[in-house]
Image 1: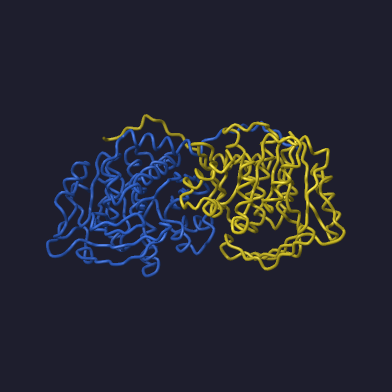
Image 2: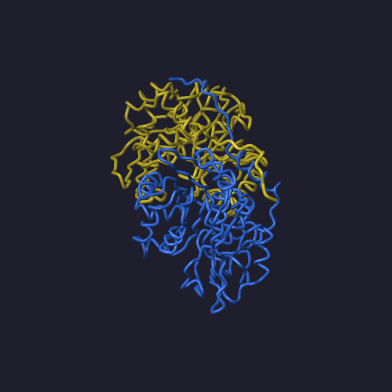
Length: 312
Length: 312
Protein backbone atom coordinates (compact mmCIF):
# COMPACT_ATOMS: atom_id res chain seq x y z
CA UNK A 1 0.00 0.00 0.00
CA UNK A 2 1.17 3.55 -0.60
CA UNK A 3 2.69 5.51 2.24
CA UNK A 4 3.15 9.25 2.44
CA UNK A 5 5.57 10.79 4.91
CA UNK A 6 5.35 14.52 5.59
CA UNK A 7 7.90 16.29 7.76
CA UNK A 8 11.26 17.93 8.15
CA UNK A 9 14.25 17.14 5.98
CA UNK A 10 17.11 18.93 7.65
CA UNK A 11 20.72 19.30 8.63
CA UNK A 12 21.79 18.20 12.11
CA UNK A 13 25.02 18.92 13.90
CA UNK A 14 25.37 16.47 16.76
CA UNK A 15 27.51 16.19 19.84
CA UNK A 16 27.37 13.05 21.98
CA UNK A 17 29.75 11.70 24.63
CA UNK A 18 31.13 9.48 21.84
CA UNK A 19 31.99 12.19 19.36
CA UNK A 20 30.51 14.89 17.18
CA UNK A 21 29.52 15.47 13.58
CA UNK A 22 29.63 18.30 11.09
CA UNK A 23 26.34 19.17 9.44
CA UNK A 24 24.79 15.86 8.36
CA UNK A 25 21.42 15.18 6.78
CA UNK A 26 18.71 14.49 9.33
CA UNK A 27 15.15 15.56 10.01
CA UNK A 28 12.12 13.55 11.11
CA UNK A 29 10.89 12.77 7.59
CA UNK A 30 14.35 11.61 6.49
CA UNK A 31 14.52 9.02 9.25
CA UNK A 32 10.91 7.96 8.75
CA UNK A 33 11.01 7.55 4.99
CA UNK A 34 14.41 5.82 4.92
CA UNK A 35 13.24 3.34 7.54
CA UNK A 36 9.87 2.79 5.88
CA UNK A 37 11.69 2.08 2.61
CA UNK A 38 12.59 -1.38 3.94
CA UNK A 39 8.89 -2.21 4.04
CA UNK A 40 6.59 0.03 2.00
CA UNK A 41 6.51 -0.55 -1.74
CA UNK A 42 5.17 2.89 -2.65
CA UNK A 43 6.98 5.37 -0.47
CA UNK A 44 6.24 9.04 -1.05
CA UNK A 45 7.90 12.01 0.64
CA UNK A 46 6.73 15.59 1.17
CA UNK A 47 9.17 18.10 2.62
CA UNK A 48 11.24 21.14 1.80
CA UNK A 49 14.98 21.78 1.51
CA UNK A 50 17.02 24.88 0.70
CA UNK A 51 19.78 25.77 -1.70
CA UNK A 52 22.44 24.04 0.41
CA UNK A 53 20.96 20.53 0.32
CA UNK A 54 23.26 17.91 -1.25
CA UNK A 55 22.18 16.39 -4.54
CA UNK A 56 23.61 13.02 -3.41
CA UNK A 57 20.86 12.75 -0.82
CA UNK A 58 18.26 12.78 -3.59
CA UNK A 59 20.21 9.87 -5.07
CA UNK A 60 20.14 8.07 -1.72
CA UNK A 61 16.38 8.53 -1.46
CA UNK A 62 16.03 7.25 -5.04
CA UNK A 63 18.16 4.17 -4.32
CA UNK A 64 15.74 3.39 -1.48
CA UNK A 65 12.79 3.66 -3.86
CA UNK A 66 11.58 6.87 -2.22
CA UNK A 67 9.55 9.17 -4.44
CA UNK A 68 10.89 12.73 -3.94
CA UNK A 69 8.47 14.47 -6.29
CA UNK A 70 7.02 16.15 -3.21
CA UNK A 71 10.38 17.19 -1.75
CA UNK A 72 10.42 20.88 -2.70
CA UNK A 73 13.65 22.77 -3.31
CA UNK A 74 13.51 26.42 -2.35
CA UNK A 75 16.49 28.26 -3.86
CA UNK A 76 15.79 31.37 -1.79
CA UNK A 77 17.06 30.03 1.51
CA UNK A 78 18.82 27.37 3.51
CA UNK A 79 17.75 23.97 4.79
CA UNK A 80 16.40 23.70 8.35
CA UNK A 81 19.32 23.26 10.75
CA UNK A 82 19.51 21.90 14.27
CA UNK A 83 22.55 21.72 16.53
CA UNK A 84 22.22 19.62 19.63
CA UNK A 85 24.36 18.22 22.40
CA UNK A 86 23.55 15.11 24.43
CA UNK A 87 24.28 14.73 28.13
CA UNK A 88 26.27 11.79 29.47
CA UNK A 89 23.10 9.73 30.10
CA UNK A 90 21.97 10.20 26.46
CA UNK A 91 18.43 10.75 27.67
CA UNK A 92 18.71 14.52 27.84
CA UNK A 93 19.94 16.98 25.25
CA UNK A 94 20.39 20.71 24.85
CA UNK A 95 19.55 22.59 21.69
CA UNK A 96 22.52 24.81 20.89
CA UNK A 97 21.17 26.33 17.68
CA UNK A 98 18.08 26.16 15.46
CA UNK A 99 17.78 27.86 12.08
CA UNK A 100 14.40 27.35 10.44
CA UNK A 101 15.52 28.52 6.99
CA UNK A 102 13.08 27.57 4.20
CA UNK A 103 11.07 25.59 6.74
CA UNK A 104 9.75 28.79 8.29
CA UNK A 105 7.18 29.69 5.64
CA UNK A 106 6.67 26.24 4.25
CA UNK A 107 3.27 25.43 2.80
CA UNK A 108 3.46 21.75 1.82
CA UNK A 109 2.34 20.84 -1.68
CA UNK A 110 0.98 17.36 -2.32
CA UNK A 111 1.74 16.13 -5.84
CA UNK A 112 -1.24 14.76 -7.71
CA UNK A 113 0.46 11.35 -7.90
CA UNK A 114 0.39 11.14 -4.08
CA UNK A 115 -3.39 11.51 -3.84
CA UNK A 116 -3.99 7.76 -3.59
CA UNK A 117 -2.14 7.64 -0.23
CA UNK A 118 -3.51 5.00 2.09
CA UNK A 119 -1.06 5.34 4.96
CA UNK A 120 -0.08 8.83 6.08
CA UNK A 121 2.68 9.66 8.54
CA UNK A 122 2.73 13.22 9.78
CA UNK A 123 6.19 13.72 11.27
CA UNK A 124 6.67 16.18 14.12
CA UNK A 125 5.71 19.61 12.72
CA UNK A 126 3.76 22.74 13.59
CA UNK A 127 0.29 21.24 14.29
CA UNK A 128 -1.48 23.56 11.86
CA UNK A 129 0.74 22.34 9.00
CA UNK A 130 -0.04 18.76 9.95
CA UNK A 131 -3.74 19.64 9.85
CA UNK A 132 -3.59 21.45 6.53
CA UNK A 133 -1.57 18.68 4.92
CA UNK A 134 -4.14 16.11 5.92
CA UNK A 135 -6.91 18.32 4.50
CA UNK A 136 -5.05 18.66 1.21
CA UNK A 137 -5.59 14.98 0.54
CA UNK A 138 -8.84 14.65 -1.43
CA UNK A 139 -9.55 11.26 0.08
CA UNK A 140 -8.79 10.63 3.73
CA UNK A 141 -6.12 7.92 4.00
CA UNK A 142 -7.05 4.62 5.61
CA UNK A 143 -4.61 5.17 8.47
CA UNK A 144 -3.24 8.49 9.68
CA UNK A 145 -0.47 8.57 12.24
CA UNK A 146 1.33 11.54 13.73
CA UNK A 147 4.21 12.44 15.98
CA UNK A 148 4.45 15.67 17.95
CA UNK A 149 6.52 17.22 20.74
CA UNK A 150 6.39 19.12 24.02
CA UNK A 151 7.02 22.48 22.30
CA UNK A 152 3.62 22.39 20.55
CA UNK A 153 1.94 21.43 23.82
CA UNK A 154 3.55 24.49 25.41
CA UNK A 155 2.58 27.03 22.77
CA UNK A 156 -0.10 25.58 20.44
CA UNK A 157 -2.15 23.15 22.51
CA UNK A 158 -5.47 24.11 20.86
CA UNK A 159 -4.10 23.52 17.35
CA UNK A 160 -2.59 20.26 18.48
CA UNK A 161 -5.90 19.08 19.94
CA UNK A 162 -7.60 19.94 16.65
CA UNK A 163 -5.19 17.65 14.72
CA UNK A 164 -5.58 14.89 17.31
CA UNK A 165 -9.30 14.71 16.48
CA UNK A 166 -8.45 13.83 12.87
CA UNK A 167 -5.92 11.02 13.26
CA UNK A 168 -5.92 7.28 13.93
CA UNK A 169 -2.69 6.90 15.86
CA UNK A 170 -0.47 9.15 17.93
CA UNK A 171 3.12 8.33 18.78
CA UNK A 172 4.82 10.35 21.54
CA UNK A 173 7.29 9.74 24.34
CA UNK A 174 6.43 9.21 27.99
CA UNK A 175 7.08 12.75 29.20
CA UNK A 176 5.00 14.13 26.32
CA UNK A 177 2.17 11.72 27.21
CA UNK A 178 2.29 13.01 30.78
CA UNK A 179 2.28 16.63 29.62
CA UNK A 180 -0.54 16.14 27.12
CA UNK A 181 -2.78 14.33 29.62
CA UNK A 182 -1.75 15.91 32.92
CA UNK A 183 -1.50 12.39 34.34
CA UNK A 184 1.64 10.80 35.76
CA UNK A 185 0.46 7.18 35.42
CA UNK A 186 0.94 6.22 31.78
CA UNK A 187 -2.13 4.01 31.96
CA UNK A 188 -4.26 6.97 33.04
CA UNK A 189 -2.49 9.22 30.53
CA UNK A 190 -3.32 6.79 27.73
CA UNK A 191 -6.97 6.66 28.74
CA UNK A 192 -7.24 10.45 28.51
CA UNK A 193 -5.33 10.76 25.24
CA UNK A 194 -7.47 8.08 23.60
CA UNK A 195 -10.45 10.32 24.37
CA UNK A 196 -8.85 13.20 22.45
CA UNK A 197 -9.25 11.52 19.07
CA UNK A 198 -6.76 8.80 18.17
CA UNK A 199 -8.00 5.21 18.55
CA UNK A 200 -4.43 4.02 18.99
CA UNK A 201 -1.58 5.43 21.05
CA UNK A 202 2.07 4.47 21.15
CA UNK A 203 4.09 5.75 24.09
CA UNK A 204 7.84 5.49 23.45
CA UNK A 205 9.95 5.09 26.56
CA UNK A 206 13.39 5.05 24.91
CA UNK A 207 15.65 2.53 26.64
CA UNK A 208 12.60 1.29 28.55
CA UNK A 209 10.64 0.11 25.52
CA UNK A 210 7.30 1.12 24.05
CA UNK A 211 3.65 0.75 25.04
CA UNK A 212 0.76 0.33 22.62
CA UNK A 213 -2.74 1.27 23.77
CA UNK A 214 -6.10 0.74 22.06
CA UNK A 215 -9.41 0.71 23.95
CA UNK A 216 -8.64 -1.42 27.04
CA UNK A 217 -5.86 -3.33 25.35
CA UNK A 218 -2.20 -2.82 26.18
CA UNK A 219 0.88 -4.26 24.55
CA UNK A 220 4.42 -3.74 25.76
CA UNK A 221 7.54 -4.08 23.64
CA UNK A 222 10.87 -3.98 25.48
CA UNK A 223 13.91 -2.15 24.21
CA UNK A 224 16.90 -4.32 23.49
CA UNK A 225 19.55 -3.78 26.17
CA UNK A 226 22.45 -2.32 24.19
CA UNK A 227 26.11 -2.11 25.15
CA UNK A 228 26.44 1.33 23.60
CA UNK A 229 23.99 3.94 22.45
CA UNK A 230 26.06 5.93 20.04
CA UNK A 231 23.58 8.61 18.95
CA UNK A 232 19.89 8.61 19.90
CA UNK A 233 18.98 11.24 17.27
CA UNK A 234 16.11 10.04 15.13
CA UNK A 235 15.37 6.92 17.15
CA UNK A 236 11.74 7.98 17.67
CA UNK A 237 11.32 8.81 13.98
CA UNK A 238 12.95 5.54 13.00
CA UNK A 239 10.49 3.75 15.28
CA UNK A 240 7.64 5.54 13.50
CA UNK A 241 9.10 4.65 10.09
CA UNK A 242 9.34 0.97 10.95
CA UNK A 243 5.86 1.00 12.49
CA UNK A 244 4.02 2.70 9.63
CA UNK A 245 6.17 1.03 6.97
CA UNK A 246 5.24 -2.39 8.32
CA UNK A 247 1.55 -1.42 8.43
CA UNK A 248 1.65 -0.09 4.87
CA UNK A 249 3.33 -3.27 3.70
CA UNK A 250 0.94 -5.67 5.43
CA UNK A 251 -2.15 -3.44 5.04
CA UNK A 252 -3.57 -4.77 8.28
CA UNK A 253 -4.45 -2.41 11.13
CA UNK A 254 -5.80 -5.04 13.53
CA UNK A 255 -4.45 -4.84 17.09
CA UNK A 256 -2.48 -8.04 16.54
CA UNK A 257 -0.73 -6.47 13.58
CA UNK A 258 -0.20 -3.14 15.38
CA UNK A 259 1.67 -5.21 18.00
CA UNK A 260 3.93 -6.60 15.29
CA UNK A 261 4.42 -3.08 13.94
CA UNK A 262 5.65 -1.99 17.40
CA UNK A 263 8.22 -4.80 17.36
CA UNK A 264 9.41 -3.80 13.87
CA UNK A 265 9.54 -0.13 14.87
CA UNK A 266 11.54 -0.97 17.99
CA UNK A 267 13.91 -3.23 16.07
CA UNK A 268 14.59 -0.52 13.49
CA UNK A 269 15.16 2.08 16.25
CA UNK A 270 17.68 -0.24 17.90
CA UNK A 271 19.76 -0.08 14.69
CA UNK A 272 19.45 3.69 14.38
CA UNK A 273 21.28 4.46 17.65
CA UNK A 274 24.29 2.32 16.70
CA UNK A 275 25.75 5.03 14.43
CA UNK A 276 25.59 8.78 13.97
CA UNK A 277 22.60 10.18 12.11
CA UNK A 278 20.90 8.14 9.39
CA UNK A 279 24.03 6.15 8.54
CA UNK A 280 22.79 2.84 9.94
CA UNK A 281 19.41 3.23 8.26
CA UNK A 282 20.96 3.59 4.82
CA UNK A 283 22.65 0.20 4.57
CA UNK A 284 20.55 -2.33 6.46
CA UNK A 285 20.31 -5.88 5.18
CA UNK A 286 17.18 -8.00 5.24
CA UNK A 287 19.02 -10.63 7.31
CA UNK A 288 19.92 -8.05 9.94
CA UNK A 289 16.29 -7.01 10.33
CA UNK A 290 15.04 -10.61 10.53
CA UNK A 291 17.65 -11.49 13.13
CA UNK A 292 17.05 -8.33 15.21
CA UNK A 293 13.30 -8.96 15.24
CA UNK A 294 14.00 -12.49 16.45
CA UNK A 295 16.14 -11.05 19.25
CA UNK A 296 13.24 -8.86 20.31
CA UNK A 297 10.86 -11.80 20.32
CA UNK A 298 13.16 -14.04 22.34
CA UNK A 299 13.89 -11.24 24.82
CA UNK A 300 10.50 -11.58 26.47
CA UNK A 301 9.51 -15.04 25.36
CA UNK A 302 8.45 -17.35 28.19
CA UNK A 303 6.02 -20.20 28.61
CA UNK A 304 3.99 -20.74 31.74
CA UNK A 305 1.23 -23.27 32.11
CA UNK A 306 -1.69 -22.63 34.39
CA UNK A 307 -1.14 -25.91 36.17
CA UNK A 308 1.06 -24.25 38.83
CA UNK A 309 0.33 -25.46 42.27
CA UNK A 310 -0.30 -22.83 44.91
CA UNK A 311 -0.37 -23.48 48.57
CA UNK A 312 -3.50 -21.52 49.46
CA UNK B 1 11.92 -27.61 48.73
CA UNK B 2 12.80 -25.74 51.88
CA UNK B 3 13.42 -22.01 51.73
CA UNK B 4 15.18 -19.88 54.31
CA UNK B 5 14.78 -16.11 54.34
CA UNK B 6 17.19 -14.03 56.41
CA UNK B 7 16.71 -10.30 56.84
CA UNK B 8 15.06 -7.41 58.59
CA UNK B 9 11.71 -7.62 60.30
CA UNK B 10 10.88 -4.04 61.14
CA UNK B 11 8.48 -1.20 61.68
CA UNK B 12 7.92 1.28 58.87
CA UNK B 13 6.24 4.65 59.01
CA UNK B 14 5.36 5.67 55.48
CA UNK B 15 4.31 8.86 53.76
CA UNK B 16 3.25 8.80 50.12
CA UNK B 17 1.32 11.32 48.02
CA UNK B 18 -1.74 9.14 48.73
CA UNK B 19 -1.57 9.15 52.50
CA UNK B 20 0.52 8.08 55.44
CA UNK B 21 0.70 5.31 58.00
CA UNK B 22 1.51 4.94 61.66
CA UNK B 23 4.17 2.40 62.51
CA UNK B 24 3.29 -0.74 60.55
CA UNK B 25 5.16 -4.01 60.27
CA UNK B 26 7.59 -4.07 57.36
CA UNK B 27 11.18 -5.06 56.71
CA UNK B 28 12.73 -6.93 53.79
CA UNK B 29 12.37 -10.40 55.29
CA UNK B 30 8.71 -9.78 56.15
CA UNK B 31 7.85 -8.98 52.53
CA UNK B 32 9.98 -11.82 51.19
CA UNK B 33 8.69 -14.56 53.47
CA UNK B 34 5.03 -13.51 53.21
CA UNK B 35 5.27 -13.51 49.42
CA UNK B 36 7.19 -16.77 49.27
CA UNK B 37 4.51 -18.36 51.46
CA UNK B 38 2.23 -18.53 48.40
CA UNK B 39 4.71 -20.91 46.78
CA UNK B 40 7.23 -22.55 49.12
CA UNK B 41 6.02 -25.44 51.22
CA UNK B 42 8.75 -25.22 53.85
CA UNK B 43 9.25 -21.56 54.56
CA UNK B 44 11.72 -20.66 57.31
CA UNK B 45 12.49 -17.21 58.68
CA UNK B 46 15.53 -15.83 60.48
CA UNK B 47 15.37 -12.31 61.87
CA UNK B 48 15.20 -10.33 65.08
CA UNK B 49 12.52 -8.17 66.70
CA UNK B 50 12.41 -6.15 69.90
CA UNK B 51 10.10 -5.87 72.88
CA UNK B 52 7.60 -3.73 70.96
CA UNK B 53 6.80 -6.24 68.21
CA UNK B 54 3.12 -7.26 68.05
CA UNK B 55 2.31 -10.86 68.94
CA UNK B 56 -0.41 -10.85 66.24
CA UNK B 57 2.28 -10.68 63.56
CA UNK B 58 3.62 -14.05 64.76
CA UNK B 59 0.08 -15.32 64.25
CA UNK B 60 0.03 -13.89 60.73
CA UNK B 61 3.31 -15.60 59.90
CA UNK B 62 1.95 -18.84 61.32
CA UNK B 63 -1.24 -18.59 59.28
CA UNK B 64 0.97 -18.34 56.19
CA UNK B 65 2.82 -21.49 57.21
CA UNK B 66 5.98 -19.53 58.00
CA UNK B 67 8.28 -21.12 60.56
CA UNK B 68 9.32 -18.40 63.02
CA UNK B 69 11.58 -20.54 65.19
CA UNK B 70 14.48 -18.42 63.90
CA UNK B 71 12.78 -15.08 64.50
CA UNK B 72 14.54 -14.00 67.71
CA UNK B 73 12.85 -11.77 70.28
CA UNK B 74 15.25 -9.48 72.12
CA UNK B 75 13.52 -8.01 75.19
CA UNK B 76 16.33 -5.53 75.77
CA UNK B 77 15.46 -3.17 72.92
CA UNK B 78 13.11 -2.06 70.23
CA UNK B 79 12.42 -3.35 66.74
CA UNK B 80 14.27 -1.76 63.80
CA UNK B 81 12.33 1.32 62.65
CA UNK B 82 12.36 3.23 59.36
CA UNK B 83 10.44 6.39 58.54
CA UNK B 84 10.35 7.38 54.89
CA UNK B 85 8.59 9.80 52.61
CA UNK B 86 8.05 9.31 48.90
CA UNK B 87 8.22 12.11 46.34
CA UNK B 88 5.39 12.80 43.92
CA UNK B 89 6.91 10.52 41.24
CA UNK B 90 7.10 7.60 43.73
CA UNK B 91 10.53 6.72 42.37
CA UNK B 92 12.43 8.75 44.94
CA UNK B 93 12.16 8.78 48.69
CA UNK B 94 13.75 10.47 51.66
CA UNK B 95 14.64 8.71 54.88
CA UNK B 96 13.29 10.83 57.72
CA UNK B 97 14.36 8.56 60.58
CA UNK B 98 16.14 5.24 61.14
CA UNK B 99 16.43 3.53 64.53
CA UNK B 100 18.39 0.30 64.39
CA UNK B 101 17.25 -0.94 67.83
CA UNK B 102 17.95 -4.64 68.41
CA UNK B 103 19.09 -4.91 64.80
CA UNK B 104 22.32 -3.09 65.65
CA UNK B 105 24.16 -5.94 67.36
CA UNK B 106 22.29 -8.79 65.78
CA UNK B 107 24.14 -12.05 65.29
CA UNK B 108 21.70 -14.32 63.45
CA UNK B 109 21.15 -17.79 64.87
CA UNK B 110 20.15 -20.59 62.53
CA UNK B 111 17.95 -23.15 64.27
CA UNK B 112 19.05 -26.76 63.81
CA UNK B 113 15.79 -27.52 62.03
CA UNK B 114 16.70 -25.02 59.27
CA UNK B 115 19.96 -26.78 58.39
CA UNK B 116 18.43 -28.68 55.47
CA UNK B 117 17.78 -25.39 53.61
CA UNK B 118 18.01 -25.76 49.85
CA UNK B 119 17.01 -22.27 48.80
CA UNK B 120 18.46 -19.34 50.73
CA UNK B 121 17.37 -15.73 50.37
CA UNK B 122 19.63 -13.18 52.01
CA UNK B 123 17.57 -10.01 52.26
CA UNK B 124 19.30 -6.62 52.16
CA UNK B 125 21.58 -6.54 55.23
CA UNK B 126 25.09 -5.57 56.32
CA UNK B 127 27.17 -7.70 53.89
CA UNK B 128 29.23 -9.30 56.68
CA UNK B 129 26.05 -10.60 58.34
CA UNK B 130 24.92 -12.03 55.01
CA UNK B 131 28.30 -13.74 54.70
CA UNK B 132 28.34 -15.13 58.22
CA UNK B 133 24.78 -16.40 57.92
CA UNK B 134 25.66 -18.31 54.80
CA UNK B 135 28.71 -19.79 56.55
CA UNK B 136 26.56 -20.89 59.50
CA UNK B 137 24.77 -23.36 57.26
CA UNK B 138 26.66 -26.66 57.52
CA UNK B 139 25.74 -27.59 53.96
CA UNK B 140 25.74 -24.93 51.27
CA UNK B 141 22.20 -24.53 49.91
CA UNK B 142 21.52 -25.47 46.32
CA UNK B 143 20.63 -21.89 45.40
CA UNK B 144 21.70 -18.74 47.25
CA UNK B 145 20.23 -15.40 46.29
CA UNK B 146 20.84 -12.01 47.83
CA UNK B 147 19.66 -8.44 47.69
CA UNK B 148 21.76 -5.44 48.67
CA UNK B 149 21.70 -1.64 48.42
CA UNK B 150 23.72 1.45 47.49
CA UNK B 151 24.62 2.16 51.15
CA UNK B 152 26.81 -0.97 51.37
CA UNK B 153 28.45 -0.08 48.07
CA UNK B 154 29.29 3.33 49.55
CA UNK B 155 30.78 2.13 52.83
CA UNK B 156 31.50 -1.63 52.67
CA UNK B 157 32.30 -2.47 49.06
CA UNK B 158 35.03 -4.99 49.96
CA UNK B 159 32.72 -6.95 52.27
CA UNK B 160 30.01 -6.83 49.64
CA UNK B 161 32.35 -8.22 46.98
CA UNK B 162 33.31 -11.03 49.33
CA UNK B 163 29.65 -12.09 49.68
CA UNK B 164 29.11 -11.80 45.93
CA UNK B 165 31.72 -14.51 45.38
CA UNK B 166 29.60 -16.94 47.42
CA UNK B 167 26.17 -16.57 45.87
CA UNK B 168 24.27 -17.84 42.83
CA UNK B 169 21.99 -14.92 42.13
CA UNK B 170 22.04 -11.20 42.89
CA UNK B 171 18.96 -9.00 42.69
CA UNK B 172 19.47 -5.23 42.66
CA UNK B 173 17.91 -2.20 41.01
CA UNK B 174 19.25 -0.37 37.96
CA UNK B 175 21.01 2.46 39.77
CA UNK B 176 22.66 -0.05 42.12
CA UNK B 177 23.82 -2.12 39.14
CA UNK B 178 25.37 1.02 37.64
CA UNK B 179 27.06 1.89 40.94
CA UNK B 180 28.38 -1.63 41.53
CA UNK B 181 29.80 -1.96 38.02
CA UNK B 182 30.73 1.61 37.16
CA UNK B 183 28.95 1.11 33.83
CA UNK B 184 25.97 3.09 32.59
CA UNK B 185 24.80 0.54 30.01
CA UNK B 186 22.94 -2.18 31.93
CA UNK B 187 24.19 -4.77 29.47
CA UNK B 188 27.79 -3.83 30.23
CA UNK B 189 26.99 -3.55 33.94
CA UNK B 190 25.56 -7.07 33.92
CA UNK B 191 28.63 -8.46 32.20
CA UNK B 192 30.89 -7.01 34.89
CA UNK B 193 28.69 -8.07 37.80
CA UNK B 194 28.46 -11.63 36.48
CA UNK B 195 32.26 -11.72 36.74
CA UNK B 196 32.08 -10.83 40.45
CA UNK B 197 30.60 -14.17 41.45
CA UNK B 198 26.89 -14.68 40.83
CA UNK B 199 25.97 -16.76 37.76
CA UNK B 200 22.62 -15.03 37.57
CA UNK B 201 21.67 -11.38 37.92
CA UNK B 202 18.28 -9.73 38.14
CA UNK B 203 18.16 -5.97 37.58
CA UNK B 204 14.90 -4.48 38.82
CA UNK B 205 13.81 -1.33 37.01
CA UNK B 206 10.63 -0.59 38.99
CA UNK B 207 7.88 0.69 36.68
CA UNK B 208 10.13 -0.25 33.73
CA UNK B 209 10.24 -3.98 34.44
CA UNK B 210 13.05 -6.37 35.26
CA UNK B 211 16.00 -7.88 33.37
CA UNK B 212 17.40 -11.35 33.95
CA UNK B 213 21.00 -12.05 32.90
CA UNK B 214 22.91 -15.34 32.80
CA UNK B 215 26.00 -15.87 30.64
CA UNK B 216 25.04 -14.29 27.30
CA UNK B 217 21.33 -14.82 27.84
CA UNK B 218 18.95 -11.98 28.59
CA UNK B 219 15.27 -12.06 29.49
CA UNK B 220 13.08 -9.03 29.98
CA UNK B 221 9.87 -8.94 31.99
CA UNK B 222 7.78 -5.77 31.69
CA UNK B 223 6.07 -4.12 34.62
CA UNK B 224 2.31 -3.98 34.38
CA UNK B 225 1.22 -0.40 33.65
CA UNK B 226 -0.80 0.51 36.74
CA UNK B 227 -3.32 3.30 37.20
CA UNK B 228 -2.08 3.99 40.71
CA UNK B 229 0.99 3.03 42.64
CA UNK B 230 -0.18 3.44 46.19
CA UNK B 231 2.98 2.55 48.11
CA UNK B 232 6.16 1.16 46.50
CA UNK B 233 7.65 0.07 49.84
CA UNK B 234 8.69 -3.56 49.71
CA UNK B 235 8.08 -4.02 45.99
CA UNK B 236 11.66 -5.18 45.43
CA UNK B 237 11.49 -7.58 48.38
CA UNK B 238 8.13 -8.86 47.20
CA UNK B 239 9.69 -9.48 43.79
CA UNK B 240 12.47 -11.46 45.47
CA UNK B 241 9.95 -13.43 47.53
CA UNK B 242 7.92 -14.40 44.47
CA UNK B 243 11.09 -15.24 42.53
CA UNK B 244 12.75 -17.45 45.16
CA UNK B 245 9.43 -18.88 46.36
CA UNK B 246 8.63 -20.04 42.85
CA UNK B 247 12.10 -21.56 42.47
CA UNK B 248 11.84 -23.36 45.80
CA UNK B 249 8.44 -24.72 44.83
CA UNK B 250 9.44 -25.93 41.38
CA UNK B 251 13.02 -26.88 42.38
CA UNK B 252 14.26 -26.04 38.91
CA UNK B 253 17.00 -23.47 38.39
CA UNK B 254 17.24 -23.76 34.60
CA UNK B 255 17.23 -20.46 32.70
CA UNK B 256 13.74 -21.23 31.36
CA UNK B 257 12.46 -21.58 34.91
CA UNK B 258 14.34 -18.51 36.14
CA UNK B 259 12.41 -16.60 33.43
CA UNK B 260 9.15 -17.90 34.89
CA UNK B 261 10.36 -16.92 38.36
CA UNK B 262 10.90 -13.33 37.12
CA UNK B 263 7.31 -13.26 35.87
CA UNK B 264 5.99 -14.54 39.22
CA UNK B 265 8.19 -12.08 41.13
CA UNK B 266 6.96 -9.21 38.97
CA UNK B 267 3.33 -10.28 39.32
CA UNK B 268 3.63 -10.43 43.12
CA UNK B 269 5.34 -7.01 43.21
CA UNK B 270 2.49 -5.54 41.17
CA UNK B 271 0.09 -6.54 43.95
CA UNK B 272 2.34 -5.18 46.68
CA UNK B 273 2.18 -1.55 45.51
CA UNK B 274 -1.64 -1.53 45.48
CA UNK B 275 -1.89 -1.04 49.25
CA UNK B 276 0.20 0.29 52.10
CA UNK B 277 2.86 -1.99 53.53
CA UNK B 278 2.35 -5.76 53.51
CA UNK B 279 -1.45 -5.53 53.51
CA UNK B 280 -1.95 -6.79 49.97
CA UNK B 281 0.53 -9.64 50.46
CA UNK B 282 -1.39 -10.99 53.44
CA UNK B 283 -4.67 -11.80 51.71
CA UNK B 284 -3.94 -12.83 48.15
CA UNK B 285 -6.05 -15.49 46.48
CA UNK B 286 -4.73 -18.16 44.18
CA UNK B 287 -7.09 -16.94 41.43
CA UNK B 288 -5.71 -13.43 41.69
CA UNK B 289 -2.15 -14.68 41.17
CA UNK B 290 -3.11 -16.89 38.23
CA UNK B 291 -4.96 -14.06 36.55
CA UNK B 292 -2.20 -11.50 37.18
CA UNK B 293 0.42 -13.83 35.75
CA UNK B 294 -1.78 -14.22 32.67
CA UNK B 295 -1.95 -10.44 32.35
CA UNK B 296 1.85 -10.29 32.39
CA UNK B 297 2.10 -12.95 29.73
CA UNK B 298 -0.42 -11.30 27.43
CA UNK B 299 1.21 -7.88 27.88
CA UNK B 300 4.14 -8.76 25.65
CA UNK B 301 2.71 -11.70 23.75
CA UNK B 302 3.02 -11.38 19.98
CA UNK B 303 3.47 -13.75 17.08
CA UNK B 304 5.61 -12.95 14.07
CA UNK B 305 6.48 -15.38 11.35
CA UNK B 306 9.77 -15.12 9.50
CA UNK B 307 7.95 -15.11 6.18
CA UNK B 308 7.85 -11.30 6.15
CA UNK B 309 8.68 -9.87 2.79
CA UNK B 310 11.30 -7.16 2.68
CA UNK B 311 11.95 -4.94 -0.24
CA UNK B 312 15.72 -5.22 -0.33
